[in-house]
Image 1: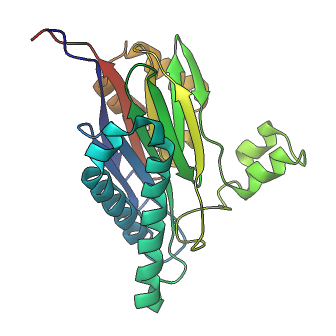
Image 2 (image 1 turned 120 degrees about the horizontal axis):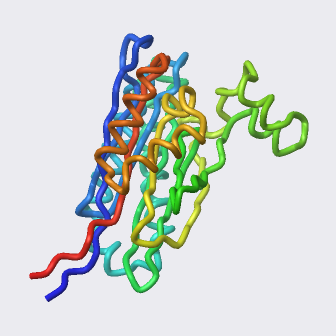
Amino acid sequence: MTQPQQWAGVGRTEKGHVRTSNQDALAVLNDCGVWIVADGMSGHPAGDIAAQTAVTVAAQQALERATWFHEHPSAAAEFVADLVMSANRRIHHLILANPSLKGMGTTFVALAMTPAPIPAAHVAHLGDSRAYLFREGQLKQLTRDHTLVESFVQRGLIDAVTALTHPERHILTKGLGLGIDMKPELTSTPIIPLDLIMLCSDGLTKMLEDSAIASVLSRANGDPRRACHDLVDQALSRGGEDNVTVIVVACTPPTIG
């Protein structure tokens, strides 16, 4: 009997060479078909607490609702959005209980996969942690950064090249902790078995341009473990100026039972 194809991810997070602590967090929930990356806001209090809280809350909810999710794949967007909003509510509850945490926040990107007959990647995000699709040698960014500079680009005030080095490029316009009613941006994308999906914090994209990321993913030949570790190693070798977190998700071949 042929077992259906499954999607599985490999994740890694590193402090980098400059930061004194790691304010990134991740969850790899292969059995649920859910993967999460969060990046605590630097320059704000308790970024590490915000990121870890967000991931812990969302991961626990994903585990608790995994059966429901698999029975209702048409509600995948609702499911992944709820993970983000639950995490945001918990952060606000922490701030209310402890005013010294006021101002803490985190980026957040969550991926949920739905299986056949129409496999799809469902992404919910806030901030500038990203999701990418890698297909047939081409890299496509699935998320849009919620930053001040990206809003300038969208309004035609600056071009994309200028945005890469703009001094305010990391100022977030959306993120967990920045508003009690903050709703994530949702993206759903059909996927095929040879695709790779990558989630990352900006510690990767600060160090590697999209072309370099695509090159690493291409050399990995579909192996998510190799892709994940090679990407993190590349970010570290190029300076590791920030915490860097990467998850790479790939389709495992069907097994014969």
